[in-house]
Image 1 (cartoon, rainbow, N blue to C red):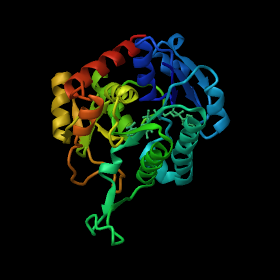
Image 2: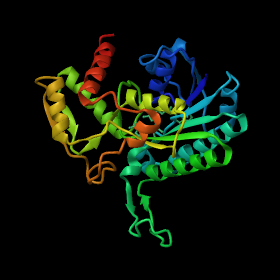
Image 3: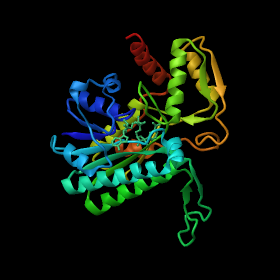
Length: 320
Ligand SMILES: NC(=O)c1ccc[n+]([C@@H]2O[C@H](COP(=O)([O-])OP(=O)(O)OC[C@H]3O[C@@H](n4cnc5c(N)ncnc54)[C@H](O)[C@@H]3O)[C@@H](O)[C@H]2O)c1
């Protein structure tokens, strides 16, 4: 079995590690491979890392000549995700939608049976409208995403599912919530960076700034494990899965977890700036029932274990 992983960042690197640890030699393609950063997650000699752009179909075609590929994991992302897409919608629309189309067309042409892509829990949250309550005879039957990033992720899911239906490609879209996890280069979304600054400050004995909004998190290792489970699941059901820790943390609860993990740590809760794309609002934690049933996904890293594991990695990195 050989998997082509497109996008070697916060999540893609962990997917590569799981597959490498299982004895596979995944192909790992990134437009700007960060070899040094990646090496702190996965042994670079255990993967085939190379430069390639998902927006260039010939890059994907060239990648597929390196080995007989059975499945593609697509995690390429625009910088800063939601925030980045609000600042530069065209680039995010191009990368997320045409990138997905290139991946699905490549799978179709080259007879690759399975594609797993990263969607986002923004679809559980950044939607409004739907006042016609699923009555399809009316215009406002379903809610609409109200950020560019969420709009592209909705398109990614719908386009992927149509390729699956039309061409018999097994397709899964995984809705990760904000991902926290070991990473020392640029990458991840705004919340990933805020979590990273918080964790590093706590370990270094500096004041840890906690985002002043309730958040649902997932550890990058759990997000990656779900991705690998989606590569192997015999029945992908409807193909779209929530992948989170399964609960929402209010700022005070996250502060309490930090206090437990790093006794004596100084914490400060900081409100997100007015108009921040990820602050405020009430929403329910993601329902993980489908992910459990079809993928066998059960989060392995509740917050306490996440903090312990992440801190251990960061201490080792800092000690270098
Ligand atoms: N990080 C989060 O909090 C989060 C939350 C929900 C969903 N997601 C989704 O998960 C996926 C992975 O996110 P991440 O946090 O690992 O992102 P990341 O920024 O850490 O990694 C993305 C990688 O894609 C690469 N890339 C960008 N453009 C490319 C292109 N044209 N061709 C090939 N590679 C390209 C980048 O160089 C980077 O290494 C994305 O689809 C993202 O939308 C992430």
